[in-house]
Each structure stands twice: as C-alpha cells, then as structure tokens.
Length: 120
Image (cartoon, rainbow, N blue to C red):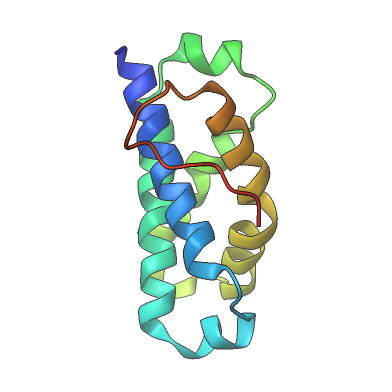
C-alpha cells in the first residue's frame, strides 16, 4: 500500500468517526457538551494533519478537494483553540464532511477493516 493510500484510510477513518459522532445529535447538544466537542475536534485535527501528509502529486491529481481548507481547519483547532467557532465546527462536521467521506470512500484502497463511507 502506498503512503498516500494509507493516509487516505486514516482520513476516511477520522471523517467517519466525526460523522458517526454527530449523527442524530443537535448543535445544542454539541455546544453544551465539552466531551462531544472534544471527540469531534480531535478527529478533525487528525483529518487535517493527515491532509498535510498527502503528497503534492496526490493533491494535484485530486484538485477538486480544497485540501488547503481541510488542513487550515486543523491549524485553527490547534493554534486558536481558545477562539474556535463551534457553529463552524458543527457546519463542517454535518455539511462539509459527508461529501469528503464519499470522495475518500471512492478512492480508498479496499480493506476488510476499512471504515465504510455512509452518508448522513
């Protein structure tokens, strides 16, 4: 398995964990529960960090994804942790991640233990 393939699997796993965590939950629940916030934000940090590890060639081949935005969100969560906009995190988790999950699922190498890309 190539390095990019392994990274795609890591990204898919993190994104699916976010999706699974927010499924059937509300923003108000998210806003009021620091544990819930922590799970979502940590997985988003993994997703962003993994994005930074993708090869430039891979990112060029798949330019339909705004890789800079995915990585940039990780930077905000890490470096501006005291000023994170929870509504923006929720929007990303509930609106922006499902298409990314579908994309990653479509290009991820097939593995028996790979997460399945389930739409919300």
